[in-house]
Length: 125
Image 1 (cartoon, rainbow, N blue to C red):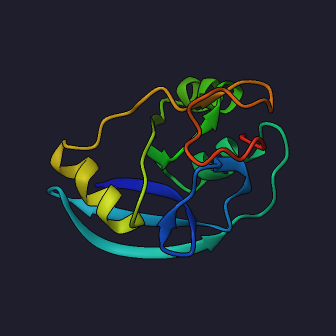
Image 2: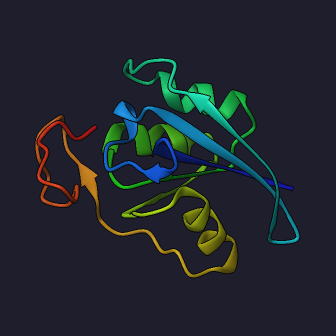
């Protein structure tokens, strides 16, 4: 069993992990999604969301963009980070399960635009 969290704006992958509206959580077995739920973002505070998602049993996080600090925390907890995703959240999770979703370099540095966050908004996190 694997649990995937997709940082989202409703059903769409968000470009800014920490400021997403919700996390779509997908549980998969044998590369097939067997359960899904939407969890509201409990609020952005430095270092909080990686711990929150780890405590939920998430083993993969998918987002459009994410700060390097959050990536480091996820990695320290053994959670795989996939950035650079876009489009439908469920489709992104399914693409990950099929091995066709690959991480890009959409890493934002210290709340400044890092050139890879997708939509030109400078509040990357």
